[in-house]
Length: 273
Length: 263
Image (cartoon, rainbow over all chains, first blue to last red; front, top):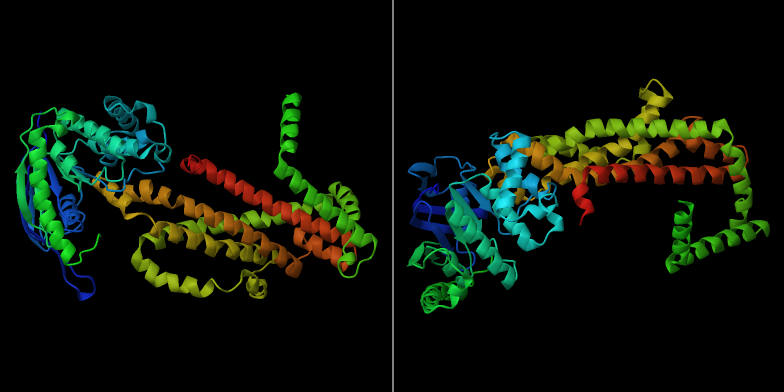
């Protein structure tokens, strides 16, 4: 059942060097994420969370350190970064291809990997959409559907690749509160059904506690792991859970840690990036 | 069926903005007619709309008039299509390869500001026939616009789409065909529409200078022969031809970019 992959980040360091101004985005950051774990990463704005996600995704190389997936080296300074469909990214601003219908978008991955012929891929896509309750919009273009539905469709597109790891970079940031809770429910169902390993970045602490098995609180830049919070709440989870004392206590604990870092960032004049 | 269209027409006439538009056109025609009839200085020299209309009616049955249409359209389409065939791959290549862009782009930037019409004397010299030189300048008119718009379209593709495709397991080749091409299509279509407009400007002027066929020459002939209503008939025909060609491009464009229609 579990097909999620274990991610091991070891001493990951990333230095950007635009115009000689050395910016250390990640500083000896290490974390172990178990197979099929739902891991949420929170931290001040611009602290380097996305840098870490991009390194896992294979969009850029590390300056030092290594990242392993199931014991295999994914990324190191000497290994050129390669993205792959074993760890699919869902982007902050959404990246459904506007020139394809939702069904074509969902069929994109399996077709790109030459796993399926176009016709089979289309059928498989329709099935995926059916399972996820998105059949009605299969033939719509992304420009025609609401932003909340677009996010769900993008998650469906990612899951159609059956990735070991799902990387989500603040996917629900721009959604209104109501749409957000519905989207959480959706993601939870996907997770409970398929159990991929999830690496989820957010600023929303309620979201973090509600979704996560563990919450990683990052320090301000250069980012390392400041604190790890276990969220031992049973699954499947219901949105009413958020009002429970357990949840509230965890949230407060999480907030204290994040706030301390945010204050530090604020005082050195860190800007939103 | 007829009742349907009649109803549609009544409805359209009921629209206030349409009535205003018709009113201004009517006023314009009346003023034009009057100034011509009364011999108002300068503007009165233009033939009256009634004379133009009468001339148009006779021209409609004149094979020479329709041949002019045919000749100009053939020149336009030939030049335009060659511009697409050469320009689109070049634009894509320059958009994709940074090295190629660094090498070839400066050359294009030097050539581009030269107005296509400035090429007329040279092209008359080095092309064996007037027809070829005509098609060549028409081609030039569309070529640079087509190339630049595609380069721009490819360079402006959001990084997210390329990353998303790579993340979904796309090979570079697959990314080119299924991401870069469709993503740059809207911009390419803008280039085609603008290029089509330039093409008409170029062909008309070139026909006046370098040949004795086509709509441009028809208009010029009206001037040379002192048949002033023919000048205006020529002008109106060129305007209509340009409008129809652009409408055609837009129509084709819409067919290939269905996702833009839903916004």
